[in-house]
Image (cartoon, rainbow over all chains, first blue to last red; front, side, top):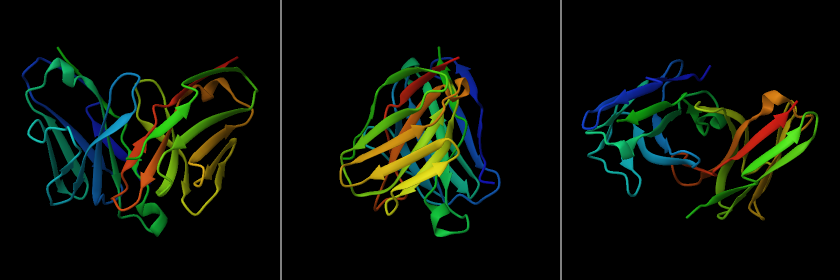
Length: 120
Length: 113
């Protein structure tokens, strides 16, 4: 159980285009989803936290108008990189938490496999 | 602001050796401490999670310890195998949030046959 699916796994796009990344919790309801970004040889950095049905909370320095997050249902969150530029090329990973039985499980984040974005 | 540091950044050992990976964090008010494995170009695989009230967790050849007072956690890998080669990340879960994780930069482990 607790599987998080992320799609696509790899995307190459031209500069100026928008890219949508999907994060789905396949067998549980995710009350909260997190979006991280990882540059080469760097750690994962939290970009934003989203709760189903409400606006996402963005970390300092992350442009909310550039990285649009929608958490329309308890099983799906999307991250749209608008007008992508080469500096947006990175590894984007989502995680989901919440809804599983037991207090312990509520604190665990289950991660997707990540999306590698390359902007030409 | 929580900061997580992992030492060493890279480690190469011969197969069969026991090894220890280190993780330190600056704010001891953590909710939990997690260890993950990341293979090249892949997502994260959760290895062990230690709640703030616990001191260690074990899973197979892996043992993770937590010392909140000193701001340290270690991941012990027994009888290392080439398949253990990966980057190991530790992450501190903060209190008062929805489970925000602060990650270290990782230790890249290479186990040579």
